Image (cartoon, rainbow, N blue to C red; front, top):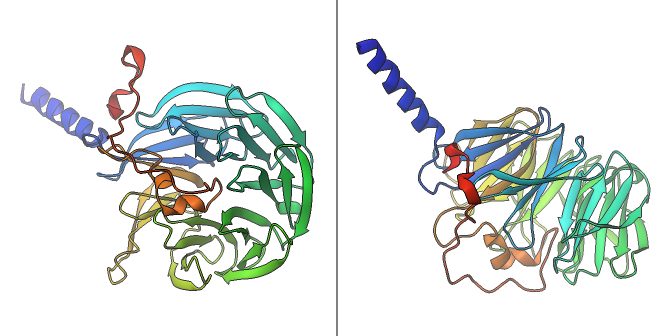
Length: 364
């Protein structure tokens, strides 16, 4: 009897560890090296579910209405649409080699860069109808839009260049050389910022004159840059020298550098301004609070799967929706910049309830 009681107590304790706290925020991490997605309770820092995908997920994006999280499984030739508030898979769509992807700010188009198949595809966002396919060169890598949705910009890793396309005429506008292995790209205050993985800095491009200048130096393997939600900083990563940099958005001066072992890659932010990042080479996620410069250590890490890449923070607390960053100053910079931030929400946002009680038990 005592043995059975002890077994039941241990089972209950295990269930408590796996279940997230009530309305706990969730973190989604794409494990490229083991074909899975880690879903993490950010309150307990525990992984509550590891969802398998077909082969090799790299990047993810929120739909324009904020209701679905789209995971691009490039090796599996598939897009997985999920309810970000529950972790429930809503549907899967067959798509050719989706590596990096982004919706246009007006919500009309979805553009996908295919690193392995050397193609750039423009889809109708609502129907996923393929509207145009380009084969612009070697290794299309990352995607960013202009705020008016008229132009899309693609980094070409193998060709040392950035290419611009006109979304209305669906024609190539220009190509400009920027440096070795261009990767992450964002629109920022009328210019493009591009990480050069084969170098140590980010380049700045004037999209009108095509002038290329050095924006800021961070270290070898300069990779991606993300605006903070409040618009007061840019955060950039270096995968080889393994650094995170805070950059002044006006002057492009590096304010602070953190040496974070493991190869910081993609970033996401929570409503408190903490930075969550994948550590590509060590199978971990790090979280850093930049508002606490004197705290030691300034970050903590948690275990996920092999080669974590894309990452997304989903608030589930009352009054904060998953697209909260679009309503703040940072929304005017990034891969999907808006002409101006959206007006603040006036009502609490909750995840959409799915029919038939299909929400996974661990995420209820």
